[in-house]
Image (cartoon, rainbow, N blue to C red):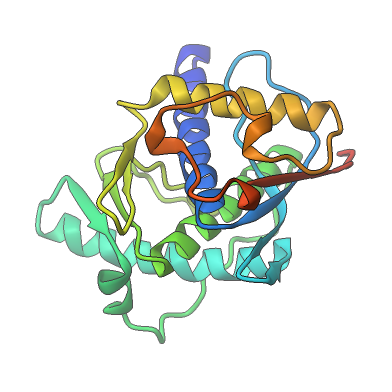
Length: 227
């Protein structure tokens, strides 16, 4: 893959993941991030090692299991949409609930490389956060034309926009700069080893991005060295 295309793909994933993480924190979620080297060619895709929501803690294994369920339901939705020649879909709790719950979880095969392992973790985290947000009444818009499923890795769904249950919509197109600043602020704070952060530690962003309760906005970090 040419470097410009790779850069563009990574940046789209990074913006989508940042949008998810911000919305997740906005409903009281907390994320433990793994410290990792910052890419020199693209925005960092935020990935959590552990999350807490409604006093329930989810490990990477928990997130992977839920993400697989979410991804398999997404596959069914996408197949149906494409059969009807639709180019985009809106995903919410109701449409996911309508998908057969007996669908088998197609867990990706064991990765053969560090890059594939990293991509699986990124996808699992992103898809898990989307799954949680859907349960809390959020709806997602996604374009289907660029989605190409793989059997070797879990698909990383790149969302165009997210709408909360109050009707407020965030999009990677209209909110690019605030999302980039959010990514940079989070990665900077993690790199400085500050364990717990409030919204006061993050540079001010537009009102649509302001958590309802600043006491719920926390970021923790954990040291992790990749082999």
